[in-house]
Image (cartoon, rainbow, N blue to C red; front, side, top):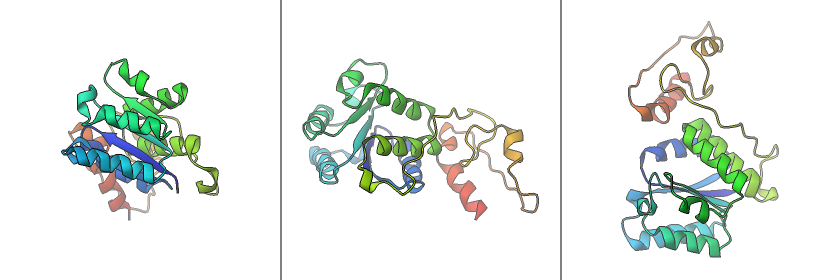
Amino acid sequence: MTTIGLYTATENELGSAAAAAGETEVDLLARSKGDLDDPTDVDDFLSELVAADAAAVVLWLHGGTDSMPGYERATERLREAGVPVVVKATGDAFAAEDTTADGELATRAREYLERGGTANLANLLRYLADAYGAADEAPPGGYEHDDPVALPSEGVYHPDHPGASYEELVATFDPETPTVASGSTRPTGLTRTPATSTRRCAR
C-alpha cells in the first residue's frame, strides 16, 4: 500500500486526516507540531517516512518555517531521500523553493488543503498516491480522485456530498429512513466532528 506523509502545524487537521485515510487505500503517516517537541521526535518521524518509502510528503505549515520544528533538517533529508515534498505555507517564497514535487501537482495539492474537509483531504491522498505511488501498490481500479471542491462556511454539509446545496442534499435522502441533523458553529466542525457523527448516525 502506498504511504503518504503529512505534517500539520495545528492538531485540528489530524482528525480529518485520519478520517480521510480511512476512506482511501493509502497509508498515512501524520504528525502535528505538538508531536515534535523534541529534536529526536523530528528525526524519528523522518526515519519512519524514509523507512516506509513514502511516495510523497506534505508539510502544511500554517505560517513560516518556525511552524515546524526541524523544518530545514526535514526538507534536506527528504530531498536527499528523493521523496517529493509539497510545502504549504502562508505567503512565503520559501514554500515554492522547498517544494520538490512537480509544480502543477503542488499547486493542485495546495488547493485541496485550502478547500479543507475530509473529502478534500481524502482526494489529496489519492491524488498524490496516483501521481507518485508504485503501480503494483495501487488498488485494482487505481486511485480515483475528484477535483478540489469548495465547502460552505455556512449552510448544510454531508461528508459524502461535500459542496451540495440543501435541495441537492435532501434529494439524496431515503424517505423511508429517519433524518437526523446536527449543528456546529465552529469552523473545524465542517471538517471533523460532524463528518464523524454523521456517519455514525447513518449506521
